[in-house]
Image (tube, rainbow, N blue to C red):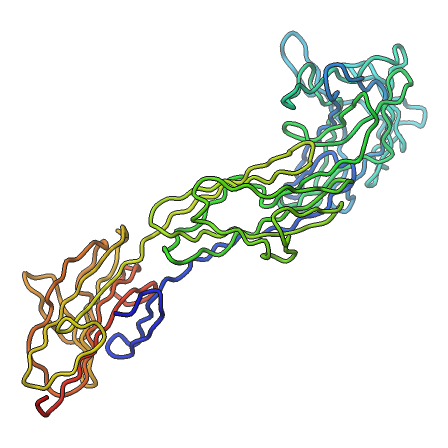
Length: 465
C-alpha cells in the first residue's frame, strides 16, 4: 500500500480521490511601525469617541530625583483627533476623582490657568487657547511657591512596579475624528522635553511602565536606549488543529526597534515541546536571518513559527527573546497546538496491497483495515468498487457487508481502529476493478477533502493463468 503522505488520484468510482493531509489556514502577520521618539501613549477607538492618554512621570528608584518642573510640547496627528482637554486625579478621604483642569479655551488673552489641585503647580501653555492646539501644544508646569515640589512622588521598585504616588500628573483627552484600529493606533508623543528639580536639570528617559508609558527620572545622565516592539501583541498564540506529518501555516513574528539605540537580540530560547514546532528565521517580508539579530533604531525583521506535530495530542512551546531592552529584557511567547493523527486506511485483495491479476475462475477476497492513530473525528466511511461499467458501494449498516449500486457512505461516525474486515469474496467477470477504502472528515454524505484512502486494483483475465 502506498504511504499516505504521498498524493495519488483515483478516477474510477469516486471520481477524484485525493490522499493526504490538507493544511488548515490561519497564518498571522503584523507590520511594525517605528514610533515617534518619546511617545507617551497609543490611542484607538471608533470615530467620535473620547479616549484618554495619561501623562505619567516616575522616578527610576526611590532615591532618584523627582520631576518638580517640566517643559514639553505635546504632539499628535491632527487629522485623526482633536484635544478635548486635560484632567487630573484628585483624592480626598480615600476616594479619587478625575477633575477637569480649568483652562483658557475661549477666554480673554489675559487668562491664566488655575493651579493643579493635587501638586499646586502652575500651568502655562502656548497657544493659550486649547482650540488652537492643532496637533501640537506647548506646556510648562512649575511650582511658584516651592520649586522642589514634585509633580508626583511615584517611583519604581526593583521589580519595575510603581510605588508611592499615582504617576499621572495630567491626563490628556482626545476626541477621535476617524476610526482608529487597535492594531494601528495613533501615537501621542512629547518633544522639546526638559525636566528639572528646583531649577536643576534632571536626567530622564521615556519608556514603558506597568500599564502604559511615562517619563522616568534618574540620578545619572540619560542615555539612548533600545525599545523592542513585538507583533502580534498577544503572548499566547494558538495554532489550528494540524495533521501529524504535516505543518500549519506559519505565524509571522515581527521584531522592531522603536528606541534610539541598537537593539541586540540574544539567541531565541525555546522550551517545552519544541520538537513539535519549527522556527524559520527566513520567513516574512524582512527575514531576521538568524536567531540573534541586531536591529538599528527603526529597523524591522521577521521570523516564522509553525506547528509541525510528529504525534497526536496537545503540544506547547515557549519562545523567549532575550535582548538589551531595559524595559522588557526577555519577553516570552507561548505557542499551542493540537496534533491530529492521520487515519491509515488499508485495502487488500488476496492479501496484496497495490494490484493483483487473476482469471475469471479464481476467487477474489477483499479486506479493509483502519488504523486511527488517535483520530476520533466524525467522518464518512467509503468502501467503493469501481469499474468501467458500474460503481457500487458497500453498506455496513446490516449484520454483514452488502453491496449496492451507486456512491454512498458505508457508514457515518467517529474514526476508530478497524480490525481486518472482509467486504467482498467472489469471482469477477473479466475487466479492471478498483476497490477503494477511505474516510473523509466532512461528515455530510459526500466525498470531499480532507479525505484519506487507499486503493487496490484487480485485473481479471479471460484465459486461465
